[in-house]
Amino acid sequence: MTIVHQHKGFSLVEVVVGSAIILTVLAGLITAFNRYAATLFRTTERVQATYLAEEGVEVARILRDASWPSFAALTLDTPYRLALVGGVWEATTSETLIAGAFDRTMTLASVYRRTSDSDIVASTSLASKAIDPDARHVLVRLSWSPLPASEVVSEAFEGGTTDEDQGSFPSNNGGGGDIAQGFTVPAGSNIVVPRVELYLRRVTAAPSDLYLEIRSGSTVGPVVATSATLNGASLPATLSWTVFTFPTRPTLTAGVLYHLRLRSDPTSTSAFSGSVGTVYWGYLQTGPSPYAGGIARRYVGHLDDPTYQGQALSQYDFSFRVYKEVPGGFAESIEHTTHLMNLFETP
Image (cartoon, rainbow, N blue to C red; front, side, top):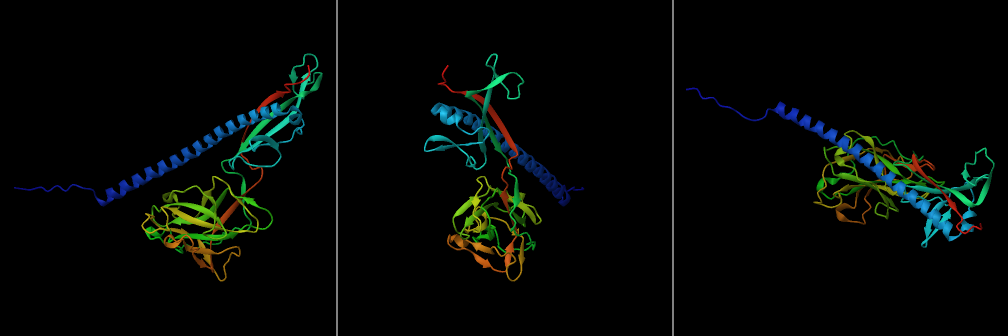
């Protein structure tokens, strides 16, 4: 009698092929999700801008109702910002952003009426017309940009291309601490920072998620800004410039030293927090430090010590690019217009 043994299971080739298919599908899903998230974000901003524009028109009516002489005295064809000060709306020429992202202006212009029937006509109309002193054309414009026009700060350091481990980060559940780089804002004027780029790569397949803090004074000083969180698995496998954006864009003071502190979620400063994997930050080693505006540090906050600024690497610098916002660099805008009359004009 012949006994036939049947072996059930998967061969190594089948496992490799199956894994490759799964990874390809996952990569496609991640790409699709990122595009969906970007589209959703842009849509959300447009809805917010629409409501803010409508509010701007209502504020113009409030200013008109409060005092027509003051409202009519505003300089024509001049963009004003609308500010709520002590519960009272004011028109000001000071440039301020709403929620750090939206620029709202109100501009008044003359209203022309046709002499024959008093209908409102355009200023370019060839008909006989005259300016109505008791009316104003109101234009409310909302400008914003998902990523404002910006440029690299002149003293950013890009020369750190060495691909090795200098920080044991995210310390793989060991509480080893964070890595950081000091940088000084160039003298001249303050800057608004929409994003920072670091030269990073993932060493393990799925390290902990990352975010970036800008701190003043030291690596453990006050947090000036915190970036959006990046998926650790989405980091490049080779050193590449990785973007960290700031939902609330900080203003940094000229000539002041700040620190870019790279952090993980779960935190790399606590043992057994669940932090995993390894991330490299490209660096350059010379003697002395190649970047005069600050030095690299590692093991910041080691073992839950909130006062430990980390080990100073006086001959090292990590690569970084700090971007400053360029004035007027808004990519999108919407406009609402209306005509407002003096409610108490003499007939």
